[in-house]
Length: 316
Image 1: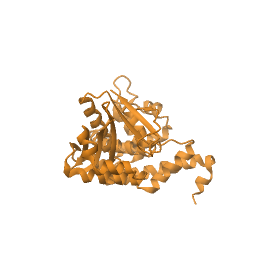
Image 2: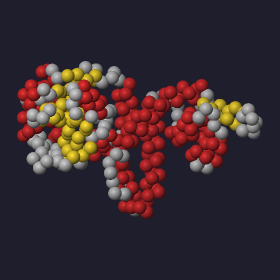
Image 3: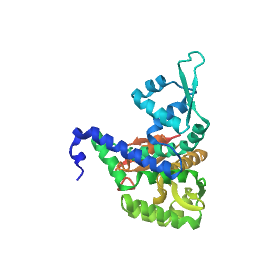
Image 4: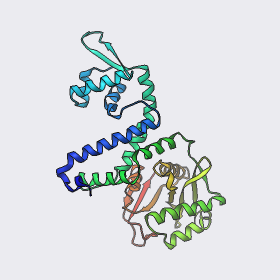
């Protein structure tokens, strides 16, 4: 049993400290994996110095609201690692201007892609809504326990440096990927409805031959994701649908690349808008749809999908 969880709000300070220490330890594992000699506890002060073209000790304290001893200790560690240099102020010789050294600038270049991935992973871990901070902490720690935080970041970094995703149009040889990717996704989150099975088994009949389009994301020539623009009715309306990404490639924004490609393609076709159907329990997906400009509509009573409880529209 987790005693701290049992304390509720009374143990909030201890819970935050535990989360902080855990994230620092996991971040250190990421730095070690990429052979970067850096301490995650030094991040805030190093970042302030990197963002400024010379900064004083007092300016660091005013920016971060850290205690002076904590700042001095961090600066000493950065200096010992050779990451910063001190210069006298031209107007006030009592002031010391702190800047990155050449080694510091090189280290910053190495750290930036890691910080980008850390930021993306934390956003992914903390997107869902909750009614209290304690509930949010419970969810966050559950995710930490489910999959290694450091490994998730490392995988994200490696994905970023791999060959770029290329997106290609439907070919008959990709039909099995269209079926398999979507069925796997549906079984993971919901179930395969008869309408799904009919469309997935006959993509040319229901999508391609009606003027629709199916796209595939490939990584190193391997299909890792798919999405479709499917005509609905006779009014020239298209649904953005059947989006699925391979389980081992999720969390690397492949779905967002497919989404942007579809939007750009729909605009090039001269479409006035796109619609989609989803479910509110897919909070990350709904967040991304809103991010791309989709707004919620009233869903019809005879929605084509039983699992759908939200309909969204993007007007160009």
